Length: 99
Image (cartoon, rainbow, N blue to C red; front, side, top):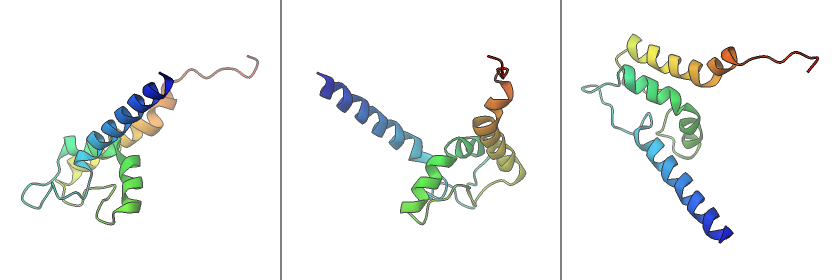
C-alpha cells in the first residue's frame, strides 16, 4: 500500500512539472508577431527555477523570453521573481533571539 502511495505521488509530481513547463520561455510559442506580454512575464517569473534547470538539458530553453513586449513583460517578470523568492521574507514575523 505504501509503494502505491509513493507511485501515485510521484506521478502527480511529474504531471505537475509537465504542466508547468508547457509555456516555458524559448519553447517557440512566442514570436515577433506574437510577443510575450505582462501575464507571460508573470508566468515566466514564477517558473524561472524550472526554466533554469530545463536550460541545462535543452539549449533552446531560456529563463527570460527574448520575444516580449518590452517594459510590461519586464514588470511582470520581475514582480513574480521578487514576490516568489524575496517578497515572502518581508512579511514573515521575525522571532527574537530570546525565543
